[in-house]
Amino acid sequence: MKNFKRHYGKILYALTFLVCVPAGLLIWAKYTRDLIQIPAIESKPAGLIFMMVGGFLILWGMVSLKKFGKGLPMNAFPPALYVSKGPYRFLHHPIYVGFGMLMIGWFIFTGSASGLWLVSPLTILGIIALVKGYEEIDLNERFPDQKIKTIFDLPGNNAGLPGLNDCLASSFWICVVLISGNFIVHKIGGSAVPLVGEPLHNYLGYNLNPLSFLSFIFLITTPFYLKRNNMLREWVISSLVSMFYLLFVGLLYPQIGAQYLPDEGYTLFTVPISLLLLSLNAIIKQARWIGLFILTFITLVVIQLFNSRSALLHCLNAIVIFFLSVNYLNIWGFLRNLSEKIANSWKEWVFGKVRVINHGFYVGFGGFFGILLAGILAGKGYALALLVSTIILVICAALWAQFIEGSEKLKRPFGFYGGLVGILFGTFAVWVMGINCWIVIGVCSVVMPWVQAIGRLRCLVNGCCHGRRIDNPFVGIRINHPRSRVCNLSGLKGELIHATQLYSIIWLFWVGILLIALWNKNFTPPFIFGLYLILVNLGRFVEEAYRGEVQTPSIRGLHIYQWTAIISILSGILMTVIKIEPVVITPCFSWESFFAAAISGLFIFFAMGVDFPYSNARFSRLV
Image (cartoon, rainbow, N blue to C red; front, side, top):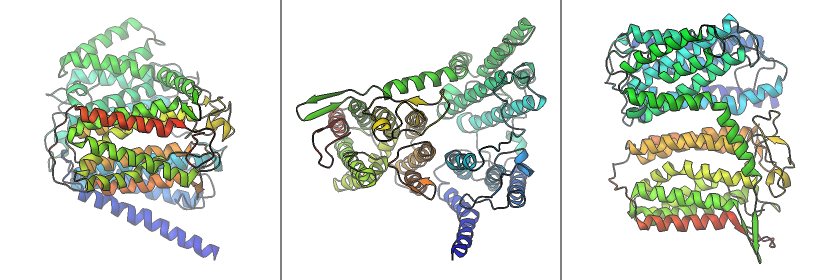
């Protein structure tokens, strides 16, 4: 009977990921094609090449898992042996890489803008979330002593001399990311025109500027001047961080971030000055002939400025991004230390039978700020609806957590997914009030990442949503305050644990910037709500894998909140396909919105920061 169930499970798993998932992605692309107004790319030859290479990687990876791992490519039924042969000598996840290439190739072959610019990026993010939130952890637990360094891995963090393979791999990643980023920013955020049906060479940047190309040569040869692996690794990571900033800002605010791309003579090989600065910064620490490199750098910068759309904005962007990128470790260290300080900052004041806890001020301010921003974006006509939705959301968050985590020690917990359920009840209440519920849903989706990020500061103080043990002191934080759940519930006082609340804050910060930009670009409220559900829950899936709360149940190897994250992601996909008629709103500040925000902030502050410490009634105590 057990073997029958296992065999049946394998068939069901295969049908899900070989049939249902690809079919679902195609349907998703079909029903969102009218929502994505980004130029499509259609090329039969390029699409076929991507699909052939992707299909080959998938098959090669599957055969290798069967032959060397004695199993199938299924997370639920993993191979018994660790595989380091076949394509796994070159890539850690060749099947996923192949699927990504196959998917992108199909959408290029068919000229699907929504498939290429919406479905593909979110699916790839989903794959990354699955790897980081489950597969890597599972592999490390099952094969703790078996690791393999592929030819495309980053250099090691040591003082050894970089090998030829390390230099080539570093140049390869910088080259691929730069060219891909330039292409995407130009086609989405730059001066792009519709490309459907055009030959591939018309938009691959063949208008090569020989002088600008010298900057590209300077960039990709940087690894060969560096004499230590750790310096090469630092250069690669800081350059990738820099390109992330460039891509993010260039897509959302091209009038600011895409200034390094010229209007005329566009080429994929344009190098932003921030990357040249990072290369010079790495080279002058180790190389000889420093004066020659500085002179070369100045010459290349002048060339780039002459070819920029705005030399001033290019310089300002370069300086800001350079300092953010070169100091990424210092920035992380500052945020980690600040998180640890906040996590140990519990304070409380007792007035008779009532207690006020300092962490309530964080969520109270977050609620006030979020509802005020939502009221400004939607206009004063939605102030009352936002207030009602907020109260219902908080109540549902309390009821949900009471059902999942409530106990003698946790009299009044709150749960994020209860808040999502509260959105449904809040929407119904708004509809009964005769107010357009889509506007309320959309604007709440825009502000919710910011509210959640501020609310995570409460989680740090309270100790909820805390991480599990970790051995790395540069990553982990220590919590010693006896009131924290880390100490009084999980027994991890003084232990190094993952700063999962900080992970969440960082992810929500970028999601919040993206969603407010989409709102300003007049994307529909259902679409924005769908993206909110998808992006926030992709981050939540990974975050949950590193959390260590003892009261959180697990089902088949995943925390219950990982399963709810998956359900929320699927719900978000369904939301993105909903089409509604455009609604005209008038954004403005109003006193109605201010008072609604103030009442919301006070209500949230009382719910999450004020309790009755001498009572044992349900919902009485926060700790």
